[in-house]
Length: 337
Image (cartoon, rainbow, N blue to C red):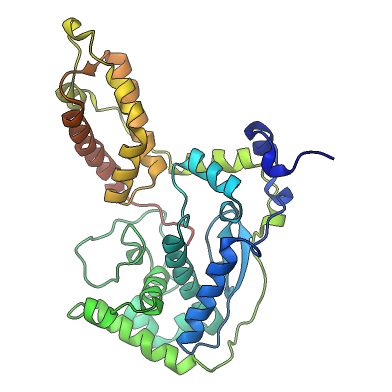
């Protein structure tokens, strides 16, 4: 008998097709979290129960009252692989997972009751039929939208606006009336509150149980999956770093005893990517892609650490944040959620 799949080498594991991974939600932390979501719906008096399955990424298909959860959350070996290749695990903590599940539940209940056909829904959130953008440029200071997921995600599309508003409303113990007092977004929350009371005991008109792109249907290998995913989050950004890098590091021959700047940046990679991703809302892999360009320029210019590591760390964080924000200004990619 061969080795269990989760004990394969990384090279062997990357050759496995996703449809061949023997994964399930039952018996994993995902089971507890999905049951917690159902309990939250029940505590709000809602009869609706979404069906849930494993897929490549987080998403709720159009017209389907169910939720797809990424496969990598179903086993610690795959979670570790996701972190290695993407530098972040979307939904990897219990808190983040529940935030995304509540958001997805908003999409699912919208599909189940066809809420976006209602005139008042369209008046508050906008037309559901509005084309879904490839990228969007949020207005961080706008108070017309709730704040739930990163990147001011409610501003991506009317469907996301509703899902985010529903997620805020569903969050147990969250004082949304006080938190959003005097915000135009409060009108949307009050509407969701009234709407959920109206449909609470009604059976959903749409009860389709189809599982779109479920894991057993995905014939990509893990290696192909990560090549596509990394390509999606990579950025084409000119290497206009030289002037900023020379302000932080030095290239004089007399400093040859000082550590190379490229090595210094590599040693701080995890901290830089984590902090800048948190501050900007950009994906950690995108931040890493920009940082890698800086590392390559430091190597080409033979730059070295010229002052204290602490000062250099602070300066690099500012520089990396600024360049990441330039990329983000071109527009965030809407997530699959």
